[in-house]
Image (cartoon, rainbow, N blue to C red; front, side, top):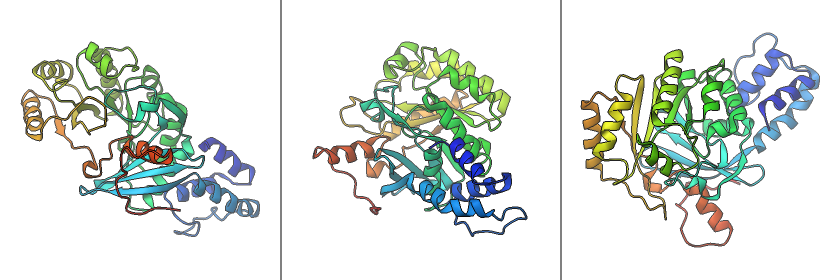
Length: 350
């Protein structure tokens, strides 16, 4: 379901702008229809009131929590089942953050990521994206939404931007707290400039060397790291939101002195933050994570060279839940495989 279709259905049922606003706000905040104080003009007309139970049932059926996997760091990984049985992952982060998925699978094929192992299976509709936020808000407050879960948001641009528009208005998420992550699709750079809700931007960089990056991200757009950083800088200057440069640390691959020099060349003086994220082990990927002391030393060196750097650990390390892993284990079990055990969930819905 798309949000545009939902709005049209509400209008056909007799909703005016204030009624539509209220229904969308209650849904995106996971609140019951009778919550809060009603403002004049928000009492629903009879035709809409008659249609609302069916609409609310359809919205509730968009997604459900298949299993929840809490971690010691305060995060909680959710395996979310969509109405057609496909599964995606959402991650509740400490301090009110939520990571959502925009695709079932992914076509980029990053060599260190499990999400793309089966390729792209289907797009996630804009209403299904917001449904992930509503599910999360049933569990805890959500004040920030990052599009860094399964999929490449730029490959599902219409649905992602429609969801961002809703979340940045009736969803009450600050625009700088909506984070659009991309491997660097030119269509995203073009469209984001034109949006009324302009999210912050995150670029999956991972290497300052064009050939190495092409190897790690084999189906990313063929733009050089220099071109990508220039596009990001232009967007950052127009919005005032610093760019987040994402860098998965792979031992012996992109953690050496050449990459330090490359990062200084690319990012010194830029309006951005470099997020160093040690690799979250994926079976059969052929990569490993550097030890923590090495990661800390790399972060210190980059800071000393003038790069605003944050060393982040992947959420949910103790539940072995790197992006795509929960879904892969569930699919493996559904097909009768016993190769890898699922982490023990907190609860089983349904």
